[in-house]
Length: 437
Image (cartoon, rainbow, N blue to C red; front, side, top):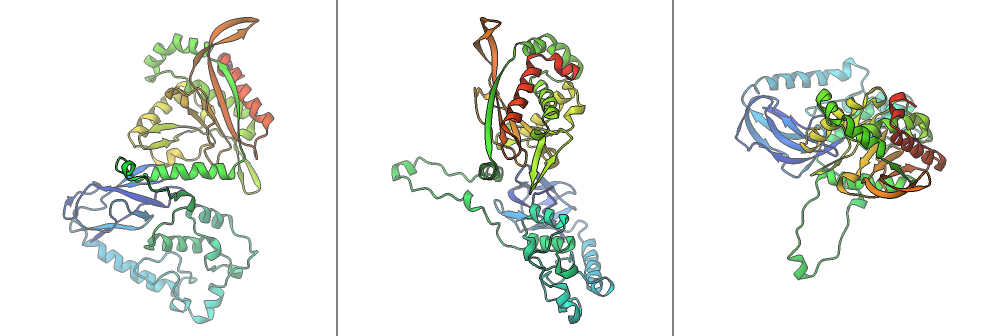
């Protein structure tokens, strides 16, 4: 019998929702054949069959929320005979481990006793108090412990510490996270996400349709609200004359596509303009970590992509080292795979700045919400011909409003306005992008 478990889902992702099973109980399955679809906070992934055989009991049903490592189902026959022996070996090793190691049962298999079992079950009583001594309330936590606590949601202060003076170690945290992952307790939903509405009149209720929010949509709603609750968010505006960029694009778009195999859009120009402005105003590329500011000397730009399931933000990495052609090709590839649901979790992590283009839907102006933990996001909008004064004369020019939403805790108003002016200057004189001015 081979177990099917929730795989590691990526940094900071600890839970998923069962989307649908591709097979029914009793169906034959081949090795690596997709068995079940999982919806995470960021992407949808498929769990392949770890071995060939027949799908046995399905433990987690459609719509259920499961944690990393949770049991999804079982596969019988087809190579499953070799598994029990391995499991017995693991059980024997786990039974001997307390006598042959320093005694910390960090990551025990499910066949052994629970992590929080009395210490006398794995060590002599004389060591019990030292092992599970509660840490002092003012004891500093190691960086690795704080990181694991933040990513997993497990409160480090509730974990028994086995380190010096009862301090919680990385191993203690990993053991606690594994225990929480295997526990059959339901996932607690944030109170802010639960809203109770007044019942509709009977005539209206008959014409309503109630649809459960996808996990991605729930996460989008929660994260956006968290940003509003925690960041000192402010938006500043400017406008850019797109005449020269549009002329450049019109002149070279055919030869560009022929050479690079990608269409020449506006995102490449905007990305390069933002990178140059980020270099000039490093605070816009920073983020808060407790009482510290982290200034990032790299430029990973997230590009918001709308899909049928919601907004996702794949990240184009090291944009300062990429040409406009490389950026355009990367964005085109991300856009296609985002709409097909084929993005990987790591492709949406690590961004330092985000660009969102509401103009493709006709938006004339908006105030975008920050993509936490980033400190700024640039909103592009519809290009619209408007009368403007140029050298004392009224002319009709293709204009676009730009909006920079930023965290005022990190970025001052002067820095935000200067950033937008830098972007405007680069776009109105595209030669600056080529000459790195």
